[in-house]
Figure 1 (cartoon, rainbow, N blue to C red):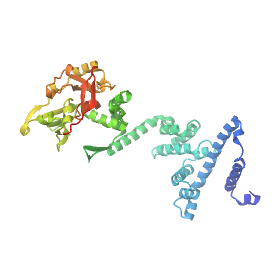
Figure 2: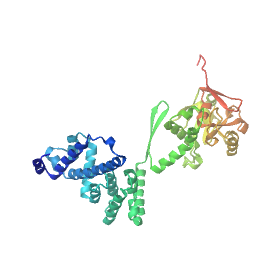
Figure 3: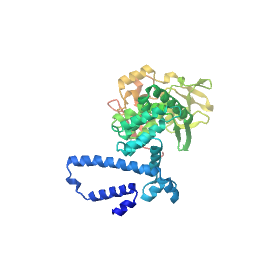
Figure 4: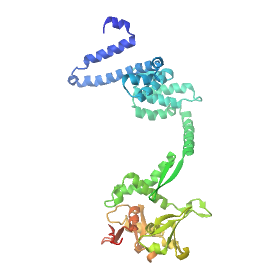
Length: 421
C-alpha cells in the first residue's frame, strides 16, 4: 500500500487493508515448524483478533442503513450478503445484533471490541438481556445483569452461558428473580393450555391419525408412562418380534396398552354410568377363526373377533355376547377376569412373558387364559399364563398358532392356510 493510498483512505479502511496485507505476508509461512507454545498462543491470539474485527464490522454494519438506501437494498445485512456471496439469514442476524450492541447493550460491545466476548457469546447475552428487559424492572438491574454476563463469558461457552442467562435475575437480584420467573411460568402455562389440542383423522385401512399439541408437563408425563411399557422391550428380549421395532412404533403400541390399563371407575361418569368400552360380538362369530365384532360408540366400529377375544382377557373392557335377534347371552362379568391376587401369583410363578425367547418382565405382562374362558376354560392359576402385550396380541391372532413347549413356554408359528382359504 502506497503512502498516497494510506493518506486518502479512511483509517478503518486503511486498517482493514493493513490486516489483509499482514495476513497475506504470513499465508505461506510453514506453520508446521512452529513450536507447540507458539501454535497454542497463535490460535488464541488469532481468535482474539477475530473478535475485535467482528466487533468493528458490527459497529459499521449498524450505521450502514444509508448504504442500503443508496443501493436500493432491503437493509445493510441483505446488501452485505449479496456483496460477499454469503447467506442472507446470518448477515441479517448480525445486523440485529449490531443494532442491539450499539443502541442498548454497549457494555457487551465494548467487551467484544476488547476481545473478551466472541460473537456467539454476544448473541446469547443480548438474547438474555432482551428477555429480561421489562417496564417494571429497575434499569440498574439490567446493568448488573449485563456486567455479570460479560464476566461469565470469560469462563463459559455459549451453550452454558445461555442456561445461565435464563437465570441471571436469580443471581443479581434473587429477591425478585423467583417471583418474576413464577409469573413467566404462569403465562407460559396459560398459553400452553390455550394452545392445547388433540385431533383425530380417520385415514382408512383401520387406522386413525392422532395429532396433538400438549403442555410440556403433560407430554413429559405421557412419555414417562409410555416408557414404562416400552422400556422392557429395550432391555433384552431375545426373540420377540416387537423388540426389533423402531421407537416410534413401540410408543404407538405402548399408547394402546396404556389406554387398556385405564380403570374406568376413576373416569368421569358418562351417561349415568362409569365410562365403559363395550365390545359386541355374536356367539357364532366369537367361536369362528375369522369374524367381525364391534366397539359401541356413536357409530359401531368393527374389529376382528380375534381382537374381541383378546380384549375379553383384560379388565375394564366389557364383552357382550349376542345370540339371535341381538339377544344378550353373556354380559362380561368379574369371574371372567383374573383377580389382583391371581395376577400377583402369576407374576411370582412366571416372572416374565412366557412366550418362547421373550424377556419382558412380569410387571409389564398381561394374564391370558390358556383355554379360552368362552370355550369353558377356568379363570385360575393353572389355566393362566403371562404374556407381554405383543405376544398377547399374537396369541389371539388367527394368522398364528401356538403350543406350550417342554419348558412351559408358548411357542408361536405362522399358520399355514389351506387351499380353500
